[in-house]
Length: 221
Ligand SMILES: C[S@@+](CC[C@H](N)C(=O)[O-])C[C@H]1O[C@@H](n2cnc3c(N)ncnc32)[C@H](O)[C@@H]1O
Image (tube, rainbow, N blue to C red; front, side, top):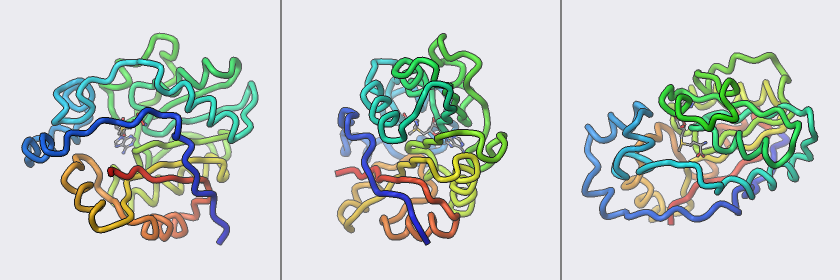
């Protein structure tokens, strides 16, 4: 089956600083339970629960330019960001190419209620495995660090949905690891992921889902 391209379209994003030891000490079932609610604690609570405070700082602007270039997007094209969080990339895609019609979807009402004012009305509340839009209705669909938050069958469904809306002009980035050592580090850090695997396991899932878009991995080193 013809697959998309493995390509790091987020190379312009600054590297996240992670204190693995602090996370290991803080992580317990209650912390994980609260993180998975994707509420205020996950986005704007202490780092033990997720982002540790997520404010707009322009970090997505160069990524937006890279995505526009990679997909050859033009004014009037529609783009969907699945798992858009507070919608910072939605805002930056629109800023980078006036006339681009960008929308987002996320399961977190808290995140949508804290989006930048310029994109109010562009963000939808919903789940990645059930995208309420017609077939082939977007020229590009992206989903960054979100699909792994669903268990395997639902992650497969999410990939099918992304394929259905985008016809394969898509990019997903998901949690992965290339070595047992990286897997151990990942497992000590992870809060929300329900499905994760080596790249080979993800490629298997992409094929099962018929996902033909581009992809890359979030690997903690
Ligand atoms: C690590 S954040 C990534 C946010 C954003 N894409 C980014 O890269 O900054 C994971 C996001 O997935 C969202 N999420 C979790 N489960 C989801 C689901 N089933 N459907 C849609 N979004 C979901 C969370 O609310 C959160 O915004």
